Structure formats: structure tokens, C-alpha cells
Image (cartoon, helix red, strand yellow):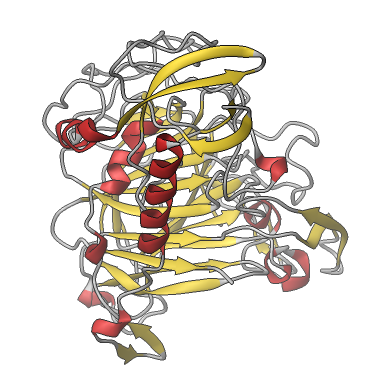
Length: 497
């Protein structure tokens, strides 16, 4: 049939795009034992996640320095980073904004809200590529008649295929067409009558954003339900992924999926919503320090340089070279709901789930005056399996799950003193690091997205336009627009093997 031929042709084009790799063929150089190839605007890791096990710490003896563990099995797309992760920042860095999102269908997060209300403008996220998409799709609209769950339905199918840099794949449709069971990608962008089967709701398109770096709006209520949108819905009764295993089906990250912001920070307005600023400052007002394990997590002071006795807001400041902070959800561990953590440590939940999106705004100014000191002028943003900082990040390796592969993802890290090249690397039982790099923002802020997608088993790092706003909700289509805005010659593709 015509529609099936169209899908086959589009799938071939997608396959052709996916053969793209890193850009090292254009040139590379070795610096300090690391290879650096080309500057890019986006890096996409594919085939992320595996089955395996690691040593999950179950007891820490501060008298002897010994620890006990149990074998923790993991599997699935993005595993083990589909577990709770913590965010980490090393100076010199100015953190202007942080936002974290999870699918609206995910388990609701208990939120600790900022009680100091600041002026907040009502804003929404970006978006612009609709005109181009509509023009491109005019000649590819097909009338589809199918039997889904025993019902005959009709709709117009607009298919022009996801690009290789698409963060969140559109939903798959399985239907009986002319007596044969067929499965294809369904992108619904309107035109023709809406489907007659049960629709999934999609959020309304966002209006154009205002000027850059105004604090993003705060949600009116903690568990506010998303309002029904006016986009045409997806006719999806059976959802599945072409790349993920069967167990990962029905993850709800199709084209109509909405992502809700579960945590937010803005340095200028001093808005903090459901985030905790911590550091390895145990014994300085909170947490503990032992000779065997060193400093546990503690509350960080407002400068991000030492401990504090209670939760503090990170100031609008530059965290200096060599200083590190950890950012967790503003939900303290209660009983064993975080699993085991070092006794006496300040322990908070991390960001859970295989599908999650992080938006950052930051600057990494040069700091030549610090050269010669340990980790000076080497800023970094990375994430860890949250069990690592809750036990020990820099203590004995036998007391951390890191060495056995529970997971670390370096998002943007300077590996050399004074370097302007920011590398990314995945550390797990199946590891890898892309040799292309993002240029360090030394004099102006950069906005960056990190998108975890279970349907495609990908992690996508994307430099964003300066006028991107960190709104309270994101549609999957908006997230994909972020990732598809960069030409292929500015995207580095890396497959974990």
C-alpha cells in the first residue's frame, strides 16, 4: 500500500542519517592524553543501557572503614542511569538556572517549595520550526483506514520521519490494515478529521518566548493536572518502541507526551523550587566527618564553598575553582526510601526514571590565577548514580558502587587546566566517551539541555538558543524541536558498544 511504501522510504532515510558518527575525520588533536576532534552544538549517545549488576552498599563501619554490599541487578534502556541520579558542579562556574522535567504520567514527586515568593513572569518555552515542518509535510499526508482493537478508524497520517537527532521518538502504531498486522511510526500534526479512537491528550503549542533569562514561572499548585490542549491527538491505542525491548513499551513518551517541571532554580531571583544544595562538607555544620570515609554530604553554604547547618539557597555567584556542589531533589530521604546511606549524612532523593530532561544555564569563566592548584580552572557538570554521594564519593572504593558500574555521566567537563573544550563521557559497565566537544562559555552564559529517552535508549546533549525559557511544562514535540534545530554537521553521534 501507498502508506506502507512511504513508511519504508522514510525508515531508509532515517537509517541513512543514523550512520553518522563523530566528526573526527575532519581533524583531531591529542592533548594531555585525551583526543579532541571538532566543536559541536549537540552530542547524542545511542544504545545506552544494558543488563548487569553492581555492588549496592548495605552497611558502612566508620570504625574499621569496611563496608558490606549486596548484588544489585539492573536492566533496560539507559540502565543503570534510569535510577536516581544526582547533579554535580565544579568551579569555576556560575549557575544561573537549573530545571528538571519528568513525564506527566510519571509518579508525582513530593515537592518542597520555596516559601519566599518572588516576582515571576508567566512564560512558556520556545519554539519555532512549525512553519518549516508544515511546508515539508504537505505532500506526505495519507488517508489511513485501520482496525484497532476491533474498531475501524480513519485519520490523515502525516509522516516525515524523526531525524537522527530527535530526542523523543514519536509513538508507534500497530493496526490491522487490509487484513494484515502492520506497525509504523505515527506523527500526527493535524490536517483532516481527528481520529475516532480514544485519543491521548497533547498540550497546547507554546506562545513565543519573552526575552532571555527572566525567571521561569512557578506552577500554581503542586499536583496541578495539565490542561487539555488543542493539538490534534495521536491515534495511539497500542504504543511500542522500535528500538527498545518489549519491557520498555508503553513508556508514554510519544509525540503527545507532556513533561512537567519537578524542580527549578534561578540565581537572579533566588527562586528555589524542590532542590537541595549539598556538598562533601560533612562535619561543617551538618553531615559527618570520619577518618575512614572522609566528609559525607552536608548542606552547602550560599557560596558553594563550605558546609552549613541548614538548607541554603545558592547565591548568584561564581563557585570558585576546585569547589564542588551536589544538587538533589528537595525531598529528604525518609527511612529506607532512598536505600542505604552513610549514617549521619545529609541524604536527599535524586532524579529518578529513564525519561527525564534537564535544562541548565551557566557560565564557566577563566581562572588563570588558580593555575597550579588541584583541579583548578577545570569546570564541569556531571551526574552520578545518587547512591554514590549518599555513601561516599571520594572515600574507599569498596564503599561506593561507582567502581562496579552503577553509573556516571559527564555532561560537560574540562579535562585540562584552562581548557575551553568541554567533553562528555559515560561511565558504567558499558562505557564510552565522544571525542567531539562543546566550547566552554567563558564570557556569556550558555543554555544546555540533557534529554534521557527510554524509547530510543539515547542521551542527547544540546546547546540551546539564548532566548530559551525554562517553562513549567514541555511537550515532547518541543523537546524534539530543541534537538532537531542543529544541522547534522554540528551533531556528534556516539554509539555505546
